Amino acid sequence: MIKFKLIYPKWTKLKRQTQFHLPPHGPIVFAATLPEDVQIDFIDENLEPINFDDEVDFVGISMMLTVQVKRGWEIADIYRHKGIPVIFGGIATMLHADETMNHADSVFLGEAEGRMDEVFSDLKQGKLKKVYHYFDDHPPIELVGNARRDILKRDMYNYKGIQMVDPVHASRGCRFHCYPCAVAYLGGRKFRPRPIEKVIEEMSGIDNNRLFILDNSLAQDTQWELDLFTAIAPLKKKWCCHTIEDKPEVLKKAADAGAWYVYQAIFDTSDYIKERIKRYHEYDIGVEGTILLGLDNHTEDYIKRLIDFLLEIELDLAEFTILTPFPHTKAFDELNEQQRIFSFNWNEYSAEKAVYYPKHMSPERLEELHTTAWDLFYKDESQEIKMFKLFKKVMQKEIADQTYKPRNRSLAGYAFGKAIQ
Image 1: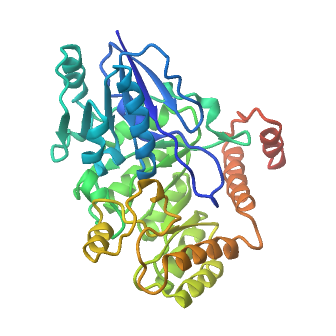
Image 2: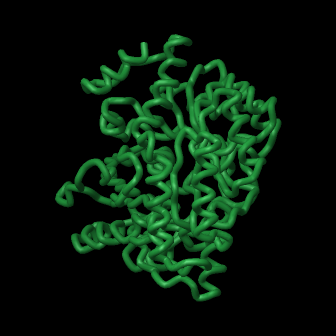
Image 3: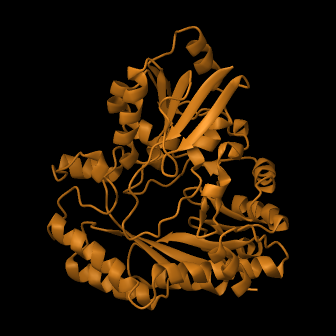
């Protein structure tokens, strides 16, 4: 039996973001690919400290965000100094592979399904490869199994006693190639849906009525969306997701299937965006706007007008970030070629700090406007209150269809549950 410690490094969250933690998806999907003779111990360093003195044979470090990489390297250096081999994987590992190799015995690049038997066999034989390179060789999507949620310490993933969402994914890859996004590099531009029956099997087995469908966008294939939502509906789950296709029949199916709210990019102040938000609301689907500041068409006046527009269209929530040129994105390639990136300190790639020279203002001024955007949007109603309203809505829906589970243990959570009944 191999004692394998899987670590998810800590990072500093957005200052203005409500401080709660969702279960990380990458590690639990990866854990499902491990051979049966591997005993796994998972540590989410955002919630508990690492005991570096635990007896362990092999360490895995799963990194999702660029702001995790330097901490991930520190952790690896400690274990390797003890003579314990370390392997890295995850999205941020793939974005920062060359640097990560300096801190690793092995780096895994790509999707893990069907590949871990090879890795652990090499480990046993003392022949661990420096790099396992599967970037351009995606495993059959049918191999994606149910994520190992049993490795999570469930009680840690709530907010003031309120049960948060569990992540799940219905597809990989994305046919879009948006300016700030690395998904096309990481997962390819071919849309690869999981068999719907496998998705439903996994959703059915999650002991949580609230889910987060993590797919980069559900608006990839109309018939697939309709089929997916039809299959989800009998589960009576309540779920949030990224973009849903802007078609009445799709939105109705989503709402009937339990769509609770969406993350929708607000990229301009057009009537299209205004109507888009209105249509979500017509189907009782909430909207959290994701707003990227610092694009080349963003002047100070434009950003101020944008904030007024967001208030006008009555978003349920808004999250403001500063354009961050992550490696292997169009943004990085363009800004780097123009020599506008002035910081490669990955701890600063938090999406709230300008690490490049904006076109129409100084980096410092962009950061000030970013703060102003948060302040103005939440001036009359705090982010916590707006979140409360979203959770109140979902709890009322759960009570109506008799799926509400009062699992919260804290006094605050109990009071919240009683208040909406």
